[in-house]
Every structure is written in structure tokens, then in C-alpha cells.
View 1 (cartoon, one colour):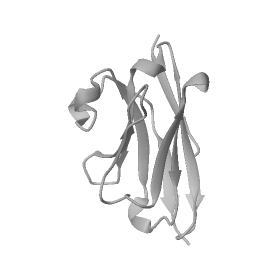
View 2 (cartoon, helix red, strand yellow):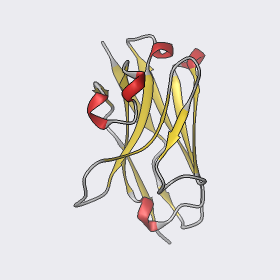
View 3 (tube, rainbow, N blue to C red):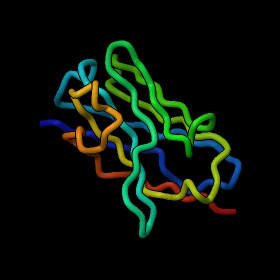
View 4 (cartoon, helix red, strand yellow):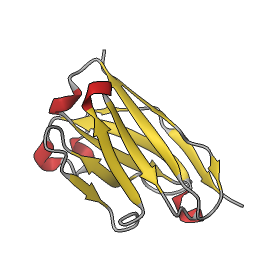
Length: 124
């Protein structure tokens, strides 16, 4: 059974940092790209970062480039999203998802399995 579980979301002050984790089970994560997405209240879900399987190529949306960093530990079947210098605009539910379609990993429709999400709230 394929499962993705996000964790690490919490209340954080503006300018602060936190790390989200996405633990995968039920499939060989090495062969999949993992994407991070977020959805703020009243807004559509948007892709913010992704990382491919073996070669760990990464992509970042302009909104998070230079502040967020994605990494993976295949031995632990876990992908991380390190978030720094957060602002109120980063407040959202953060989701991870998986796809075998590495070529289309920047496309939200390419993702097959999704986690349940973790809430990140940036407020002073």
C-alpha cells in the first residue's frame, strides 16, 4: 500500500525556519520523483519544489527559490523540505506527492499519490 506521510508543520515566526518531512512507504522511492505542494486558504494548490529519484535533480518555484531546499534520503525513504526566512505568504497546508513520470515532475497532474498534508502557519 502506497503511503506518504508529511510531518514537521507548526507555527513559526516570520524569518524563522523549519523542516518538513515526507516519509514514503509501499514503493521503492528511488524510482520516483517527489514533489512538494502547498495550498493556502482560498487559493489553488501550487507546486513549490520537486526532486527526482536517482540523480536528485531539483526544481523550485520562484516564490521559494533561494529560501527552500529539497533533499532526499532514499535509505530512509524520506524527502525533506527545509524552509528558511519564511513569511506570512508561506502559510499553507503542505503536501508531498510521488510520480514515476520524472520528465513531467514539474506538472501537478503527473503525481499519483498524495499525503494528507501538514499545516504551516507563519505568524508573530
